Length: 348
Image 1 (cartoon, rainbow, N blue to C red):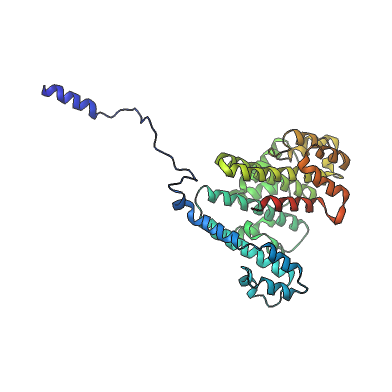
Image 2: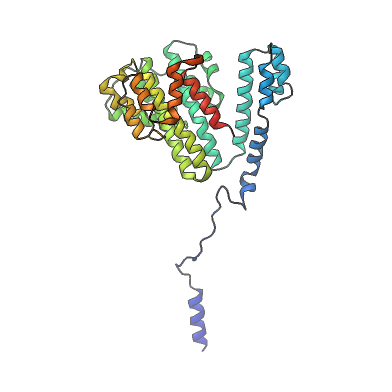
């Protein structure tokens, strides 16, 4: 009997490879039990920042201002009071700079309080400004502009270390120069993978282009923005939930805007030549959006504004914007119409 009991005990004590029928619960971003611990403070910050937005009444009062001193007076009881306190004389550029600095300060503080996946989401927002800054430095260098002036114009959300910023314009504007720029400077930056992807695709096409031309700089920029949009869209889609729905739609609209602008701006350039429409120009269209893939395929065959208008008429959400451009009423451009649409979509 003792031996039998020992054997039974040994059998029960042996570790087995079987797993529990019910796995341990996983904590997601919106888990009710852990949300406040992980994301409660950032959410409180966002709610507070949202309450500081100027209201309709504030904008109405600003429209009644006759001088910049009146503007300062109307902003004295808002969150912009501290930003304007150090300004002796209020000028439009100074007001814009103060507003941007306030936004950047709040954004960076929010980023320091965020954990995954919010931290990566906020990082993705800054990548666009990094791309813009790199292209600004490269384009400005071709024009012979002073590096200090160019750095001053860079957006604060897309700044690298000062040594990195100053080294970007030092490379030659040749295919070999861009390779060196990536390998020695951009490889360690968040936008490095996008630049590497552009260089790889250019190498696969065996292109030897004159990158000294300004239009080539714009092609590089459009390619990098395309990679960023696709990468960002893939990230939010993987998150799922309301983020995938809301931010996914915003990115789709942004992708469509880029595709339309690329097509419109290509008229009168080599990109509009029949041989390049379905290859080089179409390659710049993001592989995401409400227009993708049927709409972008039609855009690839467009040769002038009339044909572009006929394509956009098939998409109600863009036909009204195109009509603003075609009519040219009130001096509004298509960029103005896109901007108004973006503001409406971003309002909460």
